[in-house]
Image (cartoon, rainbow, N blue to C red; front, side, top):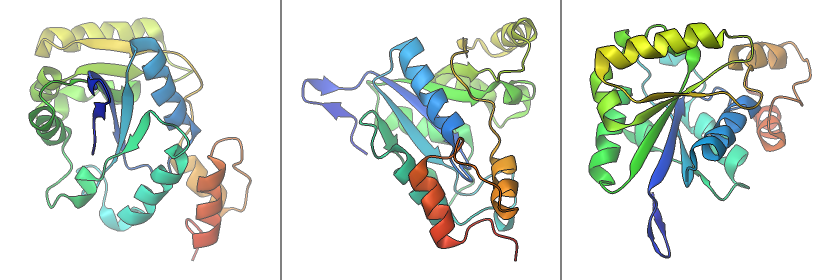
Length: 211
């Protein structure tokens, strides 16, 4: 993946990982919010390869998920697809991904974007202290969440891991991939929540249909 401008390397890169099964407008909105609120140069979307939290048999094949991400972001110049986790033979632990990125791009400041719902168990992730060391952590707050409660949790995590954690509050992000898969399986419309090219890909490839 290239991370260079004509005048030199990018300095501020957002990292947005996940299964993206499928990628939806909530993901796109989170990426735009991060760029606007924290002046990022790019956001890299990294689909999980071997997820530590989900059985791969329950996930859509990695190539389909990667292609959907590619289609969703191809019209946005500041968004990039990274296949690093898909092509890796190891489990897709965030601390490994961030370690590899900081080694490969030593002049880049990384901003790891995560959902606020994951913050409740962040200390249970594999090596959260390494993630905190390698990147500023941006916490995307869903529409229904209590900002005061999230603020308290952020302060707890900061004390535990000396982390730089900042809230990300703008835009509509309260969309669920699980609900979208169920909607597609049930033949219900999802036009408001899926990028049009992604919806077309799902339809053309028969993804999420009940067998």
